[in-house]
Image (cartoon, rainbow, N blue to C red; front, side, top):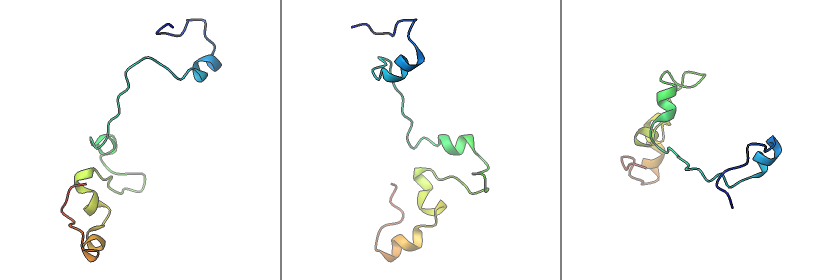
Length: 74
């Protein structure tokens, strides 16, 4: 088994080949969305990050009504 696709692979072969043998990076909760859209979404709404999710999405009243600590970081 080789660790790379041969240079003569077709596009269809590359799409079908699911084992890329390359490292993958997943960024979660790092604020990437807010960093790329500092003025918000297309409607101007602020994008939430995990630390302010409750307030940006206005969930605080609902969580308090349900007896959930709204200050707990997700």
